[in-house]
Image 1 (tube, rainbow, N blue to C red):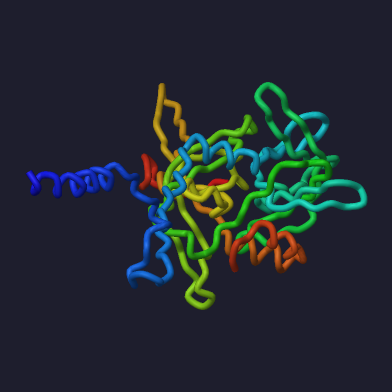
Image 2: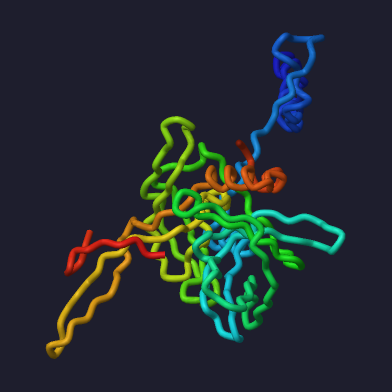
Length: 296
């Protein structure tokens, strides 16, 4: 009887301890025992989820415009471009668009007018553009356009270390003068300069068409601009129908070549527009017939 009565308080004590809530980790005593500073238990938060393809594309699209050279109200040439920077001037907001030098050649036209076009679903807005810097083709096939009033968000230039073989990319361009279109692929080749240790040429297997010159090649992982499309290699295919010969050029997969972001940075610095880099840069087979040509 006495043994039972002596054990009853101990039983109640055990039950009370079991029912007491466990204190949060930050309130627990430290390993050093009584009197030592408590160890703060940090909970590792969930990693930021990677953007889906659709979400990344929505971020990439506002960087791009299509270009058109008009004469007598008709489009004589079309190309693509990427907004690379913007600044406030006494005249208002001005944006700068990077494209190819060969795409904005107008010496053979009498009264040309260059415009940058932004497509928003069923609406299109034209902005008058001016060429402010050009490189020498083919070594530096880049040109910079000044577009007053354009308020598109500038693209971010990828660092050299971010360019890797096999990277998933999306190409934003306006082939055949149509509204902006996308094609997907990967970085199929990177040619490095042995002296400067920087990329000097990039290839992708993403399909493009005529008028895509100056289009942007973007990383699907980071959304940054990896390169600017310069052209693509084709195979001439020939055939005969009813004693008549026909031929056409077929783009070769993996032979779309582009100027990497390192060349874009160098171009802007050489032409006196290095100030734009503060916002845009984070760091420094053949068919029948058999002939191959570079098409732009």
